[in-house]
Image (cartoon, rainbow, N blue to C red; front, side, top):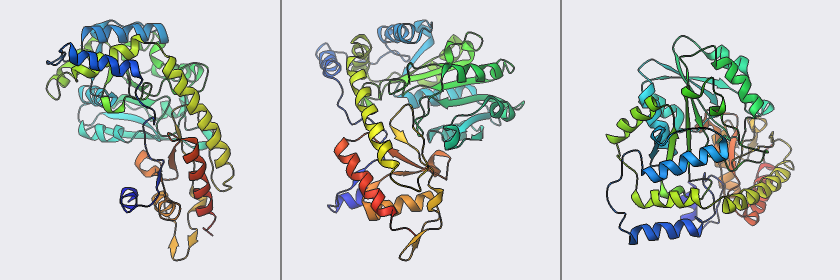
Length: 376
């Protein structure tokens, strides 16, 4: 609907995007151009070029203090493929997969593809959308095979601290047959002191499948490159799975990935600083909308406010009954596109991306506030 309005010439501000609005840094683009000139135009090894996998190993050691070998790395066409590889390799029909809500929309769908059973742990804005050890343990059954989550989280922006992860690890230590998939694609869009990975804990490291990539940190969404780091057994299985689906990812993109990890974090930190400014700006503007209930997210580039106070409110002949209704109302009356929480397993909320310029964010928040004031 938003695209239809825009096609008609309506000035729609799109805050539904899940990608940075920055350009890929020049040194990465130059590396890709050079790769073409050097004829990197042939099939690549299924798990990725050895040079790239070694660069990933170095990154995980230097930035995260986690030890892997290059044969524990499988590079794919985005973090989404890495997630799918892992779930399809681990889950058999009827196996249970624990997923905290809200969650990235593909988690539940990949579980369905594997014929697994998703077991959701509901969270609230009051708990910053993070599960407790008690909630985790209550969800584990003899059929539990996998736990999957993201930190920083899409769609909530929540970030688990090292202490919070350590408390969850104590639970996992009691259940040695449960694997943990940790989606860390938003690692560098993180406003706390340091990103913490659950893979850092030796007692469970062999059961962790760490997911990461280049799309968010280096503004490389269209390049399609991500990876997983896991035990050799899981990495080998994922390599075989990928070999029958897509084989190795784009040769040019992989050479660009090497340049990204070898080129330092200057551009990454500059982008992170800009996202922090935008987060603070939008938080202050959201606080001016009295019925919205929101927290201050510590990562990614999303707010996920609870909008239930608008349910039952009306304007003219239109009554808001769901988050989807509210998103459609805002699009029609404010010409701002946001995403309903139903897609993320939380029908109480909406996702607002602040991957847009400050000028657009200020105007969008003004429009949303004025539209919501009409609902009584």
